[in-house]
Image: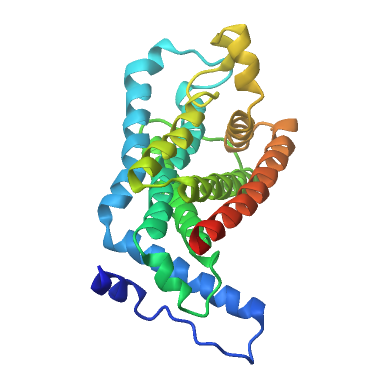
Length: 275
């Protein structure tokens, strides 16, 4: 275990340099921990396979098996489906982060970091940034597969930039929530169970079917939850239609969720690390 940690931490120690500002040192710490997590992705191709496998399976399943039975007014079902599955893939990717944070806290890595002159929350920043990068990679793969099976988005450059911006904010919020759950989990196995919360929430949205087909009570809940608002805004931007109020609502929801999740994740992580 000690040898494994030593190899993982090789080159990550940040020397105490009084001439540098605290902010610059914090940024340097975050950069090192982001690089650590990105290396994990590069060294574990199965992590990348996991990141895109389920969304691709769902895309092909709904496109060719269920798509003919689902009618969406005003657009082809594949154009409706792809933006929703991008959000589903973010939730699916977040389980790796929940487990990773829990492993750092329970397997001795954080204790090793505490012996270094570094900012503790940089550990969480590394997990979040790596998770967002995985999600953006999933976005590229999902859109490419979607184009191959009939996805024909009509959104312009500005629409796509807006959609990518909202999805990046959404992924950031989800991965901060994942770090919070990972900080709460007492064991790595328990972290895997907690992570399923973030996996299933995107399914209770308009990601796969229009909300008009849902029972009235369920429809009220689904239409007003933050993931649905985000998906509706992204879908409109990708397909070249006006997002209306959903764009601003998605921005407000996920900016607020991100700030609160980051605050509570850092607090909980520091409590666990110091305990």
